[in-house]
Length: 291
Image (tube, rainbow, N blue to C red; front, side, top):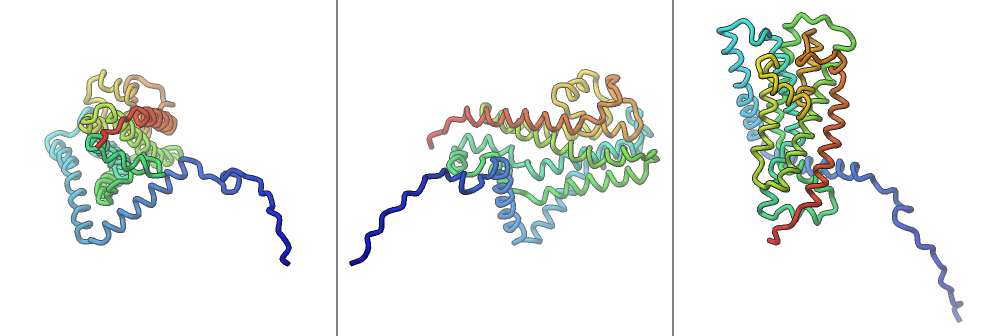
């Protein structure tokens, strides 16, 4: 006769005690990477199309600098700045915005998803909604804008006679990365606004695309009130104006002190935190269309 086996009591443990749970931001990054990889495979399936669209993106954005070149065919300085100095502003703004547009440019589609109810499909997935929206339809062709800005930026660095120091050398990548983070925060904040005003993508574009165009020119050509607005309200001046003027050895607008040129990383962090809070508030306020 087989011996009876008594059941052994097993202490119930929470899943988190057995498996190390990933932080929410790590889950979002992983999901973002997986979605981007999917779109990259789709893009590379039609490589000729990818090359042509990337070149088209490059050429379309290059017309902005062609406009500046046409202006300088009739003038020597613009707002007290020479062509290479404006090229430095143009290139840094182009790279910073291009990186943000590459990584977060799909955020402007959120209003459409809210209107047609397709946002509901993202809410039921076990993945952060922000990662899904940001990675949706990832367009590698936007590298055309980044490369065009980098070429103009390289021209400026070669042409300008800058008294380089270690701090100025470090300021260059810091300016581009901090600027990309600030623009990325503006993309997220603009998307959060679309939870309330569902047809507001153009409002968002006025701060993203419009802000990038604004920063291509020196602050001296704009009204003082506008400069104050993009410094203290929507801090786009920290994308490139203030750090670039430090590299050029130029005076800052509004009589700001010298140390403000070192604030872009802090400003970028504050903008990202504020955009995150706005996103969470917008997502909580979302009500399904019921469709």
